[in-house]
Image (cartoon, rainbow, N blue to C red; front, side):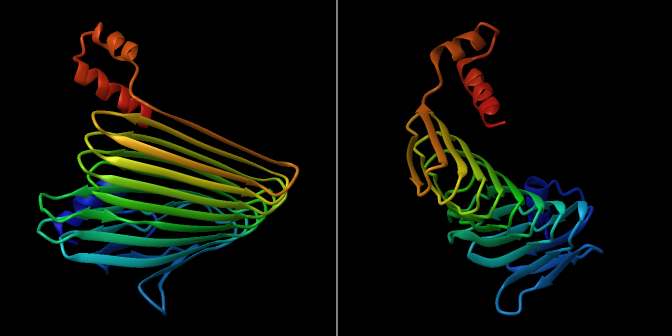
Length: 305
């Protein structure tokens, strides 16, 4: 691994010189290190770039790390990773991504991840995106996530992108079986001329399945964000979508929710709130000795925590 990769790994996956568990490190489209464990097997795909990760049934308390790093401009990395989580397993999956632009050309990573959770499986998926470098090329990250949840399984997604990525389009789709749960916590901050688009599409097919989508975002400078969510209830189910956004300077945000109920007992809700920081919040912190800028940053940090 080069020094840029090590720095990016520290930022996106809490790398401290080693990983405690199974891992695969991707650097500029190539494997920079791989270790499987007794219960988690990582193999290269036979039909294209990417990995197949098999987690044995009833695996408990283990973490698998699948970070990807683009360390210089003129790299357009595309990877397909498939995760198969066995029945009754309860694991953590860390799949952060960092891109570093050092020249005129763009630095880009596209990660296409598919999750297949068997009956009763649980997984926490943690994804952090960062962009670095002084080059003029764009830093781009465009993740695609497809989720298939069998009955009684649960996938929780914790995704974070707090600056440095010039352009991102984030697409997530899911199909849920009976009593399956999908929980998504998204936090995004953009600045300057950056753009970010989030697109969720979830189908609640199984009886008593449920989804909870929550996005918190801050648009600063002249950046622009879009939040699109579509929840389709095809059985007795619960669906909740929430978009909370703060505007700073000339930042703009658009939210477009869609709820489709195809069953009399489908309970679907959407909430959205977009606006600037309340003046009284700034005033209160300034009475404690903070400048207006310090007060604003303190409020934003708490909002995105």
